[in-house]
Image (cartoon, rainbow, N blue to C red; front, top):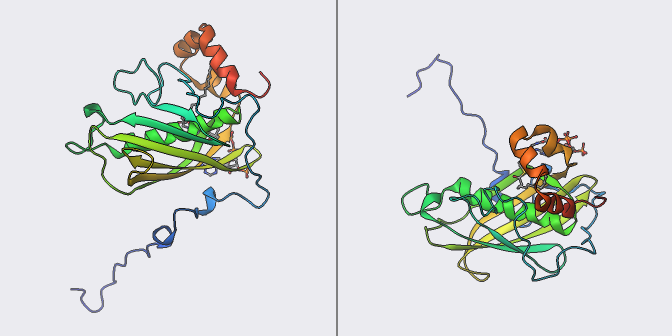
Length: 216
Ligand SMILES: CCCCCCCCCCCCCCCC(=O)SCCNC(=O)CCNC(=O)[C@H](O)C(C)(C)COP(=O)(O)OP(=O)(O)OC[C@H]1O[C@@H](n2cnc3c(N)ncnc32)[C@H](O)[C@@H]1OP(=O)(O)O
């Protein structure tokens, strides 16, 4: 009980903005500005139905060399859309028998990042907002669908949904994201030198990096 004369401690007002958003509206930083344009699929983008393959063998999201990674497989869709799948393993748990939320966010991030292949643009995640809708048990195949909504200069606005079991399964996670286009130097200037040296010495890695670039 608060005694008279004592200053009352009040909690700050809680914004209800996010609770009232539907699946298709976005908070300000994730809302494309009025000058944003629809995304344009690059003519050399992988054909609809084609598997994209890993962009880096040691990537936690898609690389084959990460024992406990997600081994997420992304496939080009029509337009600037993508689908992807990953199976939740015991190594991905947070609570007993359930996927860790950060792992699910990683799956969304990886799928959204793969979308940029279709533009042939190198981009990194600037902002990722995730809604966790229902728990995801170990053993689940999470089926992800993602699309680029708009592009404004270097800013790429995208969204994704993850469903349990397949394309018609119940929605488990949703995300909206802002990716920012960067040059290859983003990686070569900032990555740990030993991994950068190894990547630069690997012709397959260089080929994959070039596949992202509009002007390799
Ligand atoms: C040998 C080598 C091989 C290489 C092979 C490559 C392979 C290709 C790998 C891909 C990998 C994918 C993997 C999955 C996707 C990740 O997980 S990527 C990893 C996670 N993300 C990061 O590490 C990014 C860290 N952040 C940064 O480096 C910098 O903040 C950024 C994002 C590059 C932006 O910095 P910047 O270039 O200086 O740009 P800046 O001027 O600050 O911002 C540009 C615009 O974006 C807006 N913006 C920037 N950040 C934000 C934000 N957080 N919220 C809202 N707006 C923002 C700014 O307001 C600005 O807007 P305008 O003023 O133009 O309207």
